[in-house]
Image 1 (cartoon, helix red, strand yellow):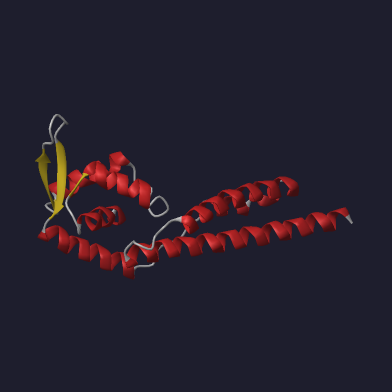
Image 2: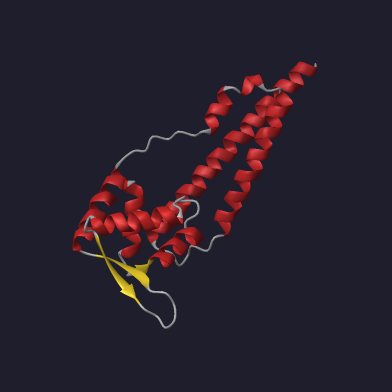
Length: 177
């Protein structure tokens, strides 16, 4: 949960925001960085408020329903910096769920294994092309770094899958000789 708290506190570092603004920003700008759902964001905002890291006020705007506005406070800034240092300095354990399928690939006929990997390649390539087309020039240095990291990870994955498809194709060629 630390990375999600870091994300929410970080979004509040520049401005007070209501929950919809936070969720909208995450959904539109960070789909490859976070998979946080709206309900999780609201729940975590309430938790951060109860822990004293953010202040919540109610905003009234004409006939619209009242909205909660979230603001980071000094305790929240301290928590943000602690979480940020912890996040940047730690090494993640990287587990790719797709590696489990690779472990048992021998149980598929080669042509099915290749077709499945080609589908995966196509999906990842679409994500990669989406990231390449994002306009991040006006984003902060940190957002640019995170998006560049994601782009590089996808490039590595695409390269690996392409090499694997080629290797499996060579096996088919050897079997038919």
